[in-house]
Length: 356
Figure (tube, rainbow, N blue to C red):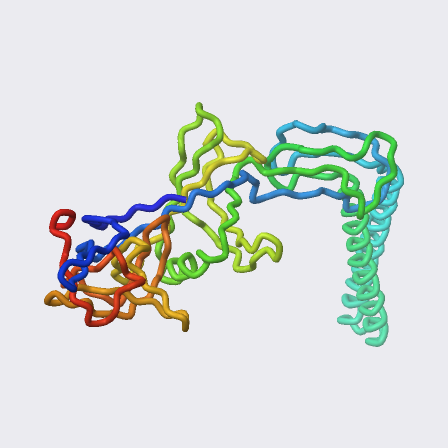
């Protein structure tokens, strides 16, 4: 973890010297600062599309057209199941369509004849109605036959498995002659066109990340591959999964990267994630300036006209030997030595030899 911040510490000390009832103290002259936090995390390259493929029909594997490591395109045929019975069913359904179509055409011809004769008053009108009924039944049977043909053709098509997207076959779990069902994972296909880096972000930074996302602020990311020949990649946090792992207490963040960035699925990377500046001005002080109270409160001592005065503050961040605090101004110097033994109203003298 690293940090970019600016503050001035003119002296850090931890001693207090008394001269003529005055405590000689070391001080710092604080300045307001807004800081960007840069998190150094580890990430793993993964594919947005990663599917375990299963056939849509049960059957015996007749043709295996790919193997692990093969690059395939969307729509490419991967395996074929034995489809002899399915082809026979299609032929039967096609024959039924032809038969019902012929019946329908004959019913139409007979209806046309009686309509013509009825117009000449040669036959009774009731015969026209009978022929219309026969034609309606023939049309219904023809429609049913076409639906059955479509059903059988779909069954035949399901004997072949096609790639749902472009990618790489990472695993092959079956071989020729094996019986497979709709629950059998036969191949694993990993997309190679849409990649992202999976990053585990400590839970304490969720507030800052979610606040930035809610304000539509981009969170800058630098992806540094673990290979010297691949240049660092500038990116953005694309999504944060707002569910923490109950073991690591970390959240998942996804960083989209280009497919041609030189990375492949499974590679490890370093990720530098820059959180936006806080909207609140803070003052950075050494830890020695903080006075801790029994009730959990914290304060500092400032020098005002040669007297130590106590100011209650809030610690918003810790970084090494320094703390970021709010609740003070930059008008008065802050005492950084002998804080535990000072009391409110103590007369103090600034150690001019170490402060300016």
